[in-house]
Image (cartoon, rainbow, N blue to C red; front, side, top):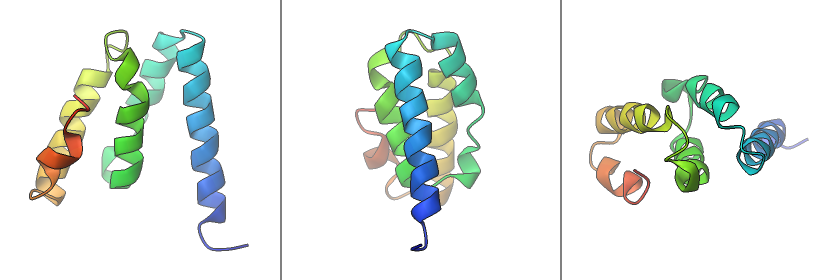
Amino acid sequence: MEDGYLEDVIVDDLFSYLDYLLDEGKFDECNEFLKAIKVDEESIVYLIAILSYTLSAKDKLDYRRELVNIVEKHFNETVPDRAERLLRGLK
């Protein structure tokens, strides 16, 4: 197996699960999923993808606003020159 293959499979499964929660209107469970994200351990691409996936349901996901704030703080600390651009349209 190629390096990263298992990680790709796991990420695909996580997004499939997130799709399921959103499609089924299981917003409380989706909030719990979002709360479990360890922002400082995830890649920029993964965090942007999570925020993109959940954007359409932002009014139904109470925790998403807090997650956006945590991600914004993390980006301002780790990639300050790109933070604003990365989050454009995702708040």
